Image: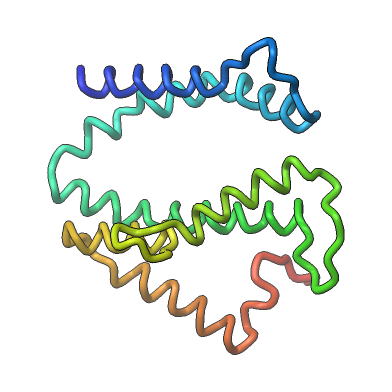
Length: 171
């Protein structure tokens, strides 16, 4: 419990250092103002997450294996959300056009860059999802379900059946 509280304090302190600004630094866009406002709006929820009891509940290897076998879907889902934001905030069409909000386009492209093509321990490019699955294998957490899921998506994408993914039918 004390370790979790200490970790929570360190996270909050480092986050606060990252978010504090010098008076000499000019804000470059409305997007930054919006981001600061969002950060303030979610601060209470963020603190609740940092202090969540899950950190005390994952106290054995079997608990960690179960958690990771489920949490890997949240890792995948985060990437889906990030890619959706990238599609909405940047030019993903064959004919490029300047983004309407360049600061947000830059932000989401940076997130995607890190999530899709980070560097692994060997210095080779690898996605965070692949890193997570490798970590699951390292602790012998089950990976069959996520691998089957990703393979079904891949096969659907190759055959074109995933074209309407995420869209509601008119029926």
